Image 1 (cartoon, rainbow, N blue to C red):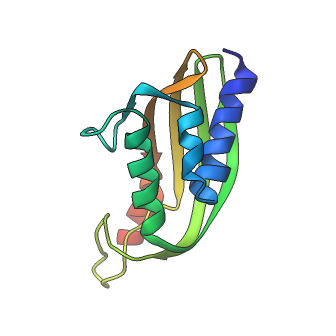
Image 2 (cartoon, rainbow, N blue to C red):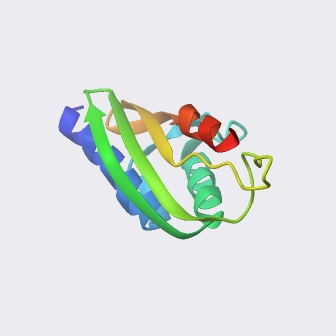
Length: 133
């Protein structure tokens, strides 16, 4: 696979799928054996759909900004941030009872035969720690 295709998959995922809710696009680039490290009980496109639907359903007025994408023939890494109003406190609360939310996220994709085979997120730990302090 080409670096261009890897970058394209990440761009579609972040902008169209996460940002605009076009969940149906997931089938176009996700392998049946796909592993999402946040949805380990599911496999394939169903796992990525569950991941995105859970995220999107928890954020009102969601806006996604793609900060940057790096790619090689087999890996794509997207750095992005979001704005909106979280509904549930899935990461906990501060001592002032405010939600702790990661705003800057890194998404790591492993790609084989032009299909996404593995996803792993990286959250901005420093930002989250700053919210607790």
